[in-house]
Image (cartoon, rainbow, N blue to C red; front, side, top):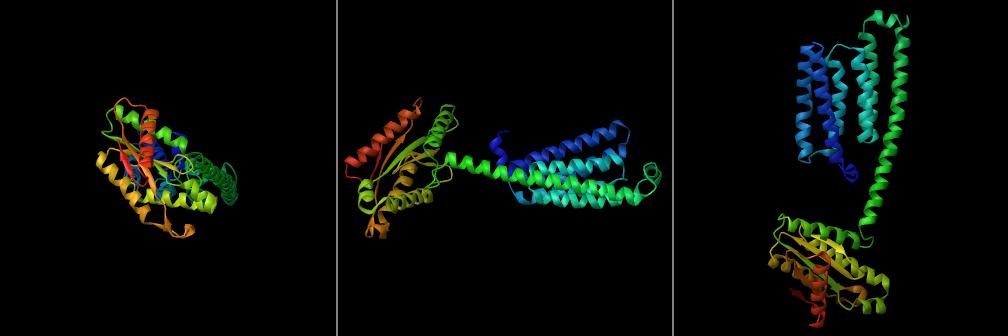
Length: 337
């Protein structure tokens, strides 16, 4: 599992549930090995009842924000289903550590409070002769255990809180390294990485068709010179919005350069890719910008279908040449090759 995936709550839910199933298997086998057949059966049944539905939901990417609270509830109830023992009590510390590793501080707080309540329950239900070997005062034992739980909870809350902040900062840095700050589209570097990956998939037979569209804003230098770079940036963002609103979920869009964009079409016939490109062009042709005297801004598009064995540089160069052909033919058009 790549580190990048840990930014996803769904991925962390999957990892947590795999650990839950692992704990269920370990608990069941351990109880069976020592001859506690009834405990082994109860542990297995409890694990299936507790984790089957959340596992289904997580793999369907549903209710991800609620899974952590469900896991917290399962862990909190576990100790009450069997007679209180020191082994089960020690597991309560393990549960809260597991939660702090993968989720934010809220379920850690809930688990910590549940463990404090369980500490009171354990002291009142454990064999009193065991307590008297430590101290004659059960209240002292209870307060000591509560103090330990509070300390552990505070430390894990801090760890979880700072871990969440670090994940957020790391995710922000990754996004900044992959996206264009002005438009929010992918940048030049990500475009070439994704194009290479897509062509590789086509070579392996995983994709039937790949097309590349190179888009350039017509007369953009004149807009910048006449109305300023702030207006030019606004036009670039509106073009990006038009591309984004017309693309399909499988299309990859990047801002290649200053006024140049690229779209990678996957598994589409060339006619469909051409129609999407034309939809973008026609939408912009009809859009009038008050910042430049309510004039429209047009684009020229070169659309090239990839051939087997074609490199990413060859594909881009040929699509780029088709875009320049559209410029020579009068601009505001799509040329297909």
